[in-house]
Image (cartoon, rainbow, N blue to C red):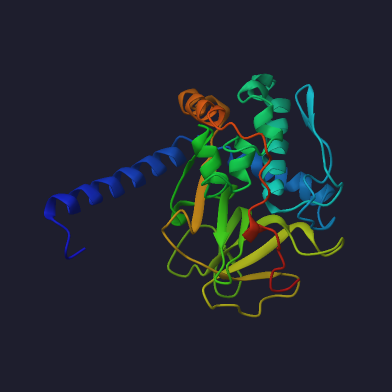
Length: 287
């Protein structure tokens, strides 16, 4: 920052302060949807884990969505970006069961849940049309917000990039140290994080499951049964490490949603976008 003008430096410091203030306020007001997403992890881990990974598989099973259904393309296998959408829909269904508020199903046109035409919500979760990841998609449609890696809470979304050129969409569970031990808060001892997503290969080994992701060149031997994912790029750039929260429905921003729906309508192409190429193979280090 030595070459920055004083006015520019003050502006950057102010933006950083505002970002931290906003994120801390988000936590203190308990505005996140993380608790419901963690309940979804429990359900999916018990019922649908290790059914196999397939880039052409979307959802382990048909998902109820109010009076409609999100159809599984190849039950019961699925892949990483579809896994995040399955987590979101499962969590929303839990929320409706608890609150009886079924209006959330009408927040987006149904097309946005089933189509990957450019700039739909699903297309952005699929990391297309300039999207950086799930948190980016939620933020774009007023359903969430992005944050710094150090501000993550269990049940947050992360899209990683690896130093081998591949990427992955996951749900953050906890920080970990160099031995793979879980940590409740960020500290200087953090060397990665535990996540939940779909990865790997065939049934019994691949599909929904947990992994222990390590940054950089660190890839230590850890306790038996803990599968590793190594070579993760640690960066403050959202394009390399997209992080963020989903918000409780009462905090969803309809103005942002309307702007994005209008933006998607401007795209006249009717073709469906495929899964981002770098997300198609998810063989982590122990698969």
